[in-house]
Image (cartoon, rainbow, N blue to C red; front, side, top):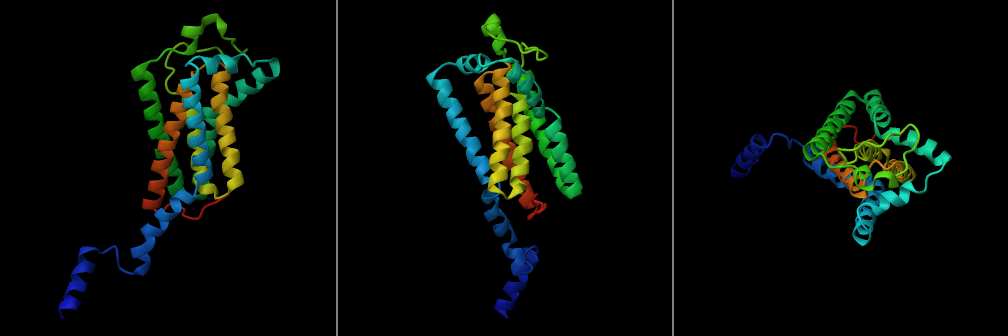
Length: 233
């Protein structure tokens, strides 16, 4: 009688644990979180470590000057266009893809991008850090069609946007090759910000950090809200 009474009390106190499947569901999903996007996440961390070591060993402006001096007419055209992926193309594509697959996933994508937007723009307007042009002046080459801005340098919004969009894709990709491809594309967007003289390396690194934070929010929310636990390309 006592055992039966305790069992009933437990069921009424924790109604979510009605059966074995429900009882283990959260553990199973959370166990899978590190498995999805792990290559993307790991490579992004490596890029962060390399970036900060480069800054420590040289100076804040050296990586920007080095990348900017690689310019030629072909790279100017390529990076002036490639950098635009960090604006709305990737973000719009990722949300459209998510909405197509499942509306709930699309809404969660949208929420994550809103969080990323508030973080990036809040820091940009709150800190209003000077761009490299303020320090380096005419030492920077300005690519045709890509005028160099003067303020709101920290963090790099293009880098944050690219790493966020492709990072969220990586979480649901479930493919090592695709994750590596995504991080290469995102890294090229970040490099384009240095090449075009728009940012310091620490701005780009901060963009990556912001994206990884959003990646974590998406992964936890994906598990908690049970959004497409087996979606892949």
